[in-house]
Amino acid sequence: MSLFHFLFISEMLFINLYVSYMCSKKKKSPLVTWAVLIIFTVILFALLRPITNNIPNYGNGNGLLVLVGFLYIFPLKYLYDQPVKYTLAIMFSSWIYTMFAFLLSFRVGYFLPSAQLNFSVLLIQTIFYVVTLPYFMRFIRQKFIYILQNVEKQALNLLLLLSFLWFIFIVLLNYVFIEGSTPSLEFIVISILAVNAMLFYKLFYSLVTVNKKVKNLSEKAKRDPLTKLKNREALYEDALQRIRKNKPFKVIFMDLDRFKDINDRFGHGVGDDYLVEFVSAVKKIFNMDSAFYRMSGDEFVIIYEGKNIDSFCHQLESLEFKNRSFDIPFYSLSLGYASFPSDGDNLSDLLYLADLNMYQKKKEKHRSIIPSN
Image 1: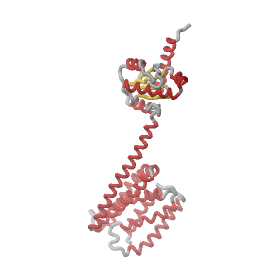
Image 2 (image 1 turned 90 degrees about the vertical axis):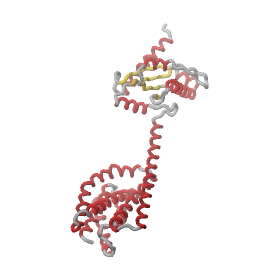
Image 3 (image 1 turned 135 degrees about the horizontal axis):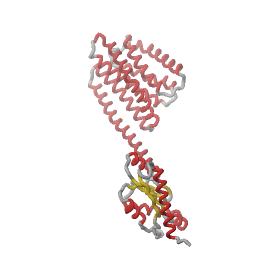
Image 4 (image 1 turned 60 degrees about the vertical axis):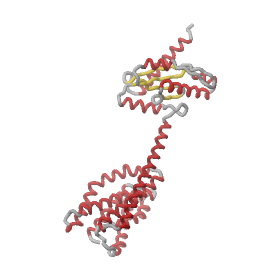
């Protein structure tokens, strides 16, 4: 093994071990960790030396020796406190990166004087690492590890297989560039590429499916289970979007009159049915869903973006329907509203003012029904 070949391999190996070290949970101290890795490397190089001397075309840049890197799974399993699949995923990503650097350096090196090929390739590879390693490490630590920590088991297995096949593909591609191709080797390379494409779409499908499930759960969390209306959390999100865009709107706060009497007289089951029919009537008459919210109990909110707020509120107050099970008429509602931005620049202030206006109207309605002595 010549000095340049030793430096090629050592540089790639150091980058791979460094990436694994920085991205893994250690069992041992840094001193012990690096001591074990160095001792393992020295033993491995000593065992490989007589073997490499008998390998045809060794040292011409075909990159096959990199496959020996799989043996490092043994010391890494001993040194790092994490699942083997986690360690393998980091190793594969690092090997793809270093093998790409090796392949690229040799390709560029062939454009330079052949007398200085080895030195040029080593220099190009070193410059590549100096420029790109900080970005690669940032990606691994901020993105890739997050994926490993949060991906489902099935998706992780697909990711591992995909990473492994991409690594084998780039090794074989480099071998073809150096040694030339044969029909059987071309078939293998094309087959791996086809499998990689299939696995990529399968992995993408798996991630999209998980994302869809999460989105559906998020939507359910923002829906009232009884009326299927959006809830308080959704109201705050929707209002915040409008406030950020500085879009004028009005918050209408509604409270159903005599709802407690219905619950006390007929039971909460009938009360729930009364709420559902109220919501259905509002949706049917006003063709409204996305801006209609149930706060709690018999309290509802509408975000109104139209211009004729008084006419709209009058229609709401004139709403009529009958409960089908007990023939209970709708006992009307009380409402109040507040406007953004004239009455407040945040939803809490708008809700407080709309609620205050609603209770003021409810008191006035109560005084008009019960004559004073």
